[in-house]
Length: 581
Image 1 (cartoon, rainbow, N blue to C red):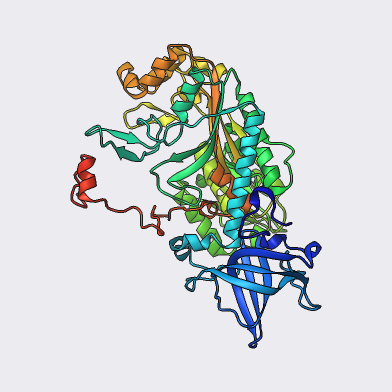
Image 2: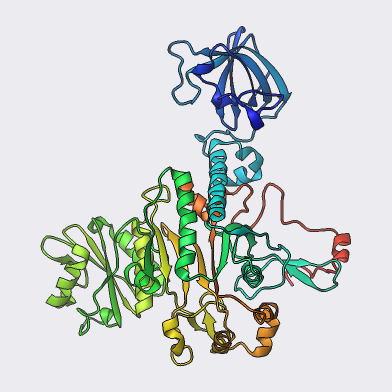
């Protein structure tokens, strides 16, 4: 399709990939980079021109003084390729530009690596020359996919009557658990801003301010160790709404995510499943289960209640079946055992299912009832493997859940997209060194209404109105119904060991705002980086971020972080301590 309207420029009148057979005979100008040049003798040259849309072959009479990555403007006549020269790998493979005039707009040095997806390039080199890496088809595709997802999310929120509001990037320290990036103030000696790890408090204040449906595609920053699904800087769809329930928020978010999925994949998922946190732990050993494969955890506690085998004398006995796992070598079984121990288990029992029974060092110690229970795990048959962990309930579940993922999880690029809402998370997650309860989410999460009477008497069994969205084993995001009642908030602070003075110091401006009429409200936020990475089939979110940091937090392209000069330090009222002190 010829470039028209807002895309038309004075330098080109077509995108490379838009040139097609319907344009044969037309004189067309394209602009882009030289992807490849081939000369046939002294009288004919072929130049592949690449722009954001794709590649187009240009045929030049005589030689042409261009090399890879030169920026060129090419004018030629659209012609059908001669018989036998059609390139089926290109969208423009049926046509070419002939009788071409080539204008060099910018010369280029040879790039440090090939800019095609067939080349295997060291990631450190790619990040050092990210401006070149971005020219590759994969990066162009991923970032344009990300832009399409953002558009779909905005459209979904706009259609649901949410108002987009930008919250500050220079903020006061917040009560959330992650470490924050600190920004020294030049005008206020000895005082600091922080970069927000989320707009949590700001968006709750918007609810007090009467913006009863807020959203933002928000930039957030957390000074945490990096991994495949975590960067210092990340982007999330952040929402908050007043006069709503948990189910309302889940509905708003589901609409946005399914709209984005339809844009990204061409198919709209029909539903998003829901299960409680307790169910997820019981059956999958994790609060972010990957539903693309089975291998669910089975409970053998009843069968082993009176066991004489010391290894199984524990409150909970859990097992999983590994289809065709009997073929695992002993070295693989030893590796799984070491992994289980590294996760806190005392050990891992394994049983190969054979035609005659069970093959395991522990088989001779089992009772008939115990042996039958193992053979019946999840319909196990000949050639399967059964793995068993006996321990405290949560630990046994989590260890087997981790082994389940290590053995069975398919790559990100494989299998369907299985969305899941996980609800009813615990309100508290144990106690700290001082014996105070710790909030599992944050101290403004509303307890489950059926568990309010347990806050003082049995707090570790209090459920919260918190909920996570999970996709293929990745936690996309979380949210909760917020506490808006002073009496409930006071009870939670007391349970957490937060005094009135500490509450005023840490949360004063939020609690003060609540005194002026806080509506019931709830919210959610999910990571756009993670969502797009799954859509793109990428294992690492760096592949869908234009300028990511390395695992060590460095920006190889700019050299950041860098030292700053003495003058800037003085302006910021800072003095550096000796390194290592």
